[in-house]
Image 1 (cartoon, rainbow over the protein chains, first blue to last red):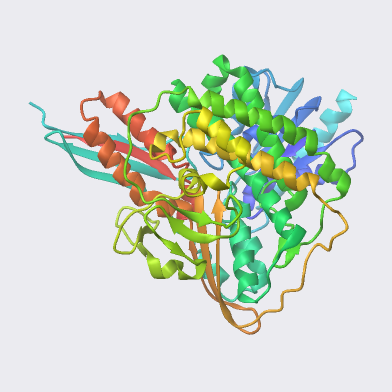
Image 2 (image 1 turned 60 degrees about the horizontal axis):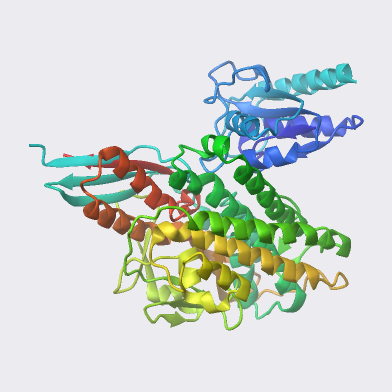
Length: 149
Length: 430
């Protein structure tokens, strides 16, 4: 399962959605694409019956725009600050992983890709360096899925 | 001796949006209680000017990721009423079902994930989940059922796209609706358990003489229609809202404060709906509420968590009723030709009454728009609660008092993004 997160009307925040949709257009066998998950609790529900899960989101860590961060969601510590929840009403990715771990609802494999954004201003379309990073993430996830098969 | 203090919470967690609280105490008397909202204004009312009347449901749905259905419902009802079209029969029922989905999602999130940790003494639901894994697991399942209803009727989980002025773009199939039956039967039992659990919580002894404002319908527990009523004698049609209520600018908030003219602050949301409409709840929901010790009238805002659970039960019953009566052969929408008019629409968002007013021309172009969300309506009452509670509990240690003040705000499940469309809390003792 591939979960894209973000708001396509807030520039580079749409990077995760864009990458998930591009992966969807590749029609990879046995891969389900989920775009538009409301908050972390919905993410736990979404991956309920999935085996391996890839989550793609935009991040703000201060790195160069277009930098790709990759985390093993089951093992790596993840900096809560860089995956800010879109609201305090909702659970960010690191909090969602903590909650899922507490109630034993983590998938068997969980890979998180974070794409460093440049701009989160109103408007559609991502920055050129983010578009390049999206293509890179699409390629890397395709290869990871192929290696799993 | 220190004779004054300040209680401050800079960033209040488990609410939607950016805001804060400041309570100042001098000589053991509260001198100031402010609910600060500093999220910048979002200008939605200005975006709407010049757009077609049919675009209002999709534009306004973007105001909130938690209650987009409420925005869609208030706007479509306003536009249809302005154009002289009344949506009845199954389309009306399906709108109620969509609203049930949003209430189930929103109430479940607030009751279990945001508010219950206050009563059980946890910083958040992640900590709570260590000791109450089944409660959290069932909450996720319940929320998923709400999401499924919104997805089925609204086309997708967040910011639904299937609602239009005149009805829906596409209706669900009979099989899709049937898939909800067993899930809703489970949800009814899970909601009963929520009422039983929340009824065991310790509630501060805090009651005030509020004016509770909500919709009231002749036969139904209110969602999309009814007169605007209060326990203090208000009973008006929706188009008179602005004659009886006014919005005021205050310096510490980017969100307007609402008052009943010549009377002051008022309370909207689950407790207001419950108090004004107990007789409209299904008998099973009434019974569950009474068994939980609620009574037919509640003026303790801390008990809003039980009332929300009762509304959860109501929404599950109502959804099941509509799903079981569904006939897939009906048309998805009716034509709504535009005409020059002023449009009014109020509906009951999970956190309270949401009022919309639009002026449209002969071509259906929006000339101006006015949106009064529930959280801005509750701001004044929240400040008054803080003032009264800190005054009554001045001797509590700082940490306890700050915790309770945060809880007071969460009693209202505020959606600050909607109202200014966020929360920081400070209690200062000098």
